[in-house]
Amino acid sequence: MPKLTAPLSDPRIVAARGPCVLKDGRGLIVDVLPSGAKVWRLRARYPDGRPVLFTIGEYGKAADQFGIRAARDEAEAARALIAQGLNPTTARRKKAFAVIKDEQRTFASAAAQWLKDEGRLDGQGAPWSRAYRYQNKRAVNELLPQIGSLPLSAISSDACHAVIRRRADKAPWASLLRMTISRVFAHAGCQPGGDLLLDPTSPLKRKRIALKPRKVKGNPYLYMKDVPDFLAAVRAHPKINPREKIGLQLLMLTLVRPGELAAAEWSQFDLEGKSAWGPIWYVPEDAMKMDEPHLVPLSRQAVALLRELREHSGDTPFLFPLRRDARKRGPDSRSDPNGKTIGSDRFSGEIRKTEFVSRVTAHGLRATASTYLNSFRQWRGDAVELQLAHLSGGGTSAAKIRATYNHADLLDERRPMMQFYSDAVLPPKKPRKATKPAKGSNVVPFRRAA
Image (cartoon, rainbow, N blue to C red; front, side, top):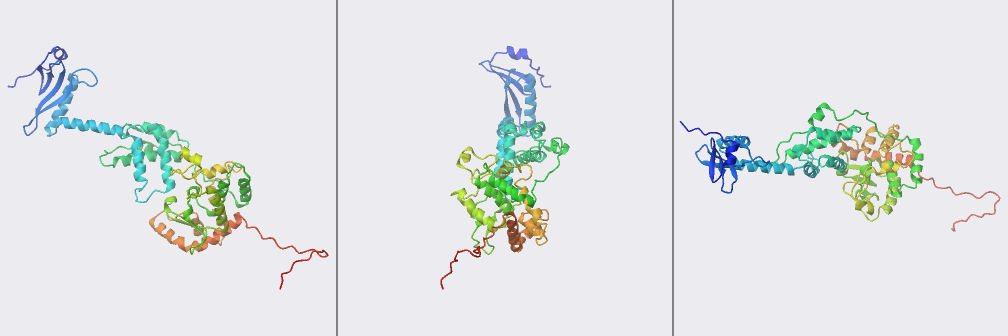
């Protein structure tokens, strides 16, 4: 019968003087060193009979030391690993490395990696548009001050709720913040070496406790009868730059979204009409909301405004470059993320300076054109929707193919339609008629020599 070992007690361990070995049973010992230090160790054997000596730690009651109960618990966990043929020392190192790695993997670093990877290719293999990339970057920048420094494993549902609740009055933006957190966690969990992370926003999505319902309102727009007063107010306002005055008129004459015009480059324009399409603006797919290239026929008034704008933009590739002082401050809410052009809300900001602040937005100018053109039977609804860069069919692949063909098929219809609308917005000046001399006057008209 094996000899039973009496369990160790604190008085016995404290009174021990080394060098000596105190046994607690089942291979657990306290190695008393000549220096007076007392170290817990475990003697055991692997299933194949090889011996192993595992150092648990120093005896004591400090935070980094082991008391009797803690040492026994650690020995029990080590025995379980040894029974599986695993080295408990190696397992401890891996666990410590995982903790350090987890502390280094903060939300800020995970979000930066998400923007870098997903900004190139999303889940469907299509590149993010410039506007969508800008929107996601704004959402991340708003989340960083609250949870950016926290490890992903330390971010709870309550922490997410507190961040999102700050924007509860703006339900769409609060939803975007929640989705951004969810996507960052999903991306981090799929990285090589990354553990599967639970999405802390899942309870918020199921219970819908973070958002307040809100009625969706469209962008306010003008009727055509109000357009002359609007343009007169814009032209006469002393605090609106000439460049932005031209930009607001171009928004009306092209029907593009504000962000698409703000980020436009001169290389996208053919003002001379050298192609078979005549004067045209080719908007690349990465600048479009629907991730599809867009052709914008340019009216005579639009071409004249673009040539005037060229004098204001200077020697830059952009129509609306950031001014030098703003570029030093870096990108903000009114600049594009590339830090080189104005932001999509700059034009609405200029409108807010006028008395039309509550009557129209820059995006609402598109609705003004749509309402006006759809009131005439001579223009098909498909041509109007295509000019607005709307995809029919819910964005399916068949709809995208149809839209691609329609770009060529309806361009002949859209060009006269846009000239018709431009003439309504900016009526061309009528040439003056030559005045005839009054009867009985002594004015002798010149005659061309034969």
